[in-house]
Image 1 (cartoon, rainbow, N blue to C red):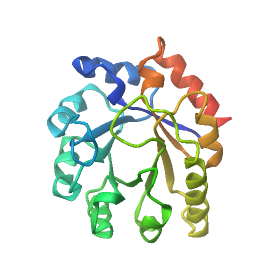
Image 2 (tube, rainbow, N blue to C red):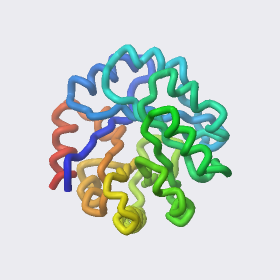
Image 3 (tube, rainbow, N blue to C red):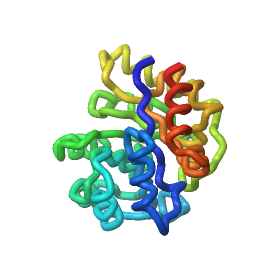
Image 4 (cartoon, rainbow, N blue to C red):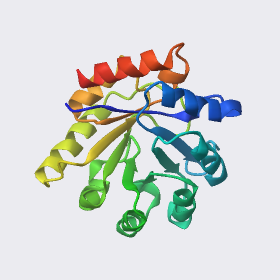
Length: 221
């Protein structure tokens, strides 16, 4: 396994002090900042949008990994790029023209990613895998932080990694999000994941730097 990318999810941070949270994880050694955007329709929660992302962009130089858990993401992609997103993830479940949407993201010059909910099979993205820089495997049902990791997602991660290898896509990143902690990160890393989104595991810890370092150590085995 190569270098693990640790992407703390600010969904688990204190929303009244998001600037401080972003600065803190930057200093603590995070690789990316994971930003969950929820619209209250695709998922049963509301979070933040482009104005908040643009404001936080001034807090750090770390890449912003923006996960769009929203309906019709194709209508607002440019807004998130202008706000400072370095990576955009859209869900296969809400993109009827997934080829077009992924190509549009690529054309804007940011990392292009596609996400799968736990119940969505790999076959939903098999024919667009070559268009993605990253696949996000949701290891919980999206919408809320602090949920328990769904163990059966290990098989999906392995399937995607094998398919990427078969297609000669050795640079494809596999990201996992949901219930990622010191007790689960090793398992998903061994299955083939490279990028690890952790919210509660980091923001509920007393020492962010120590927790991030420990997560990285467990992932890199």
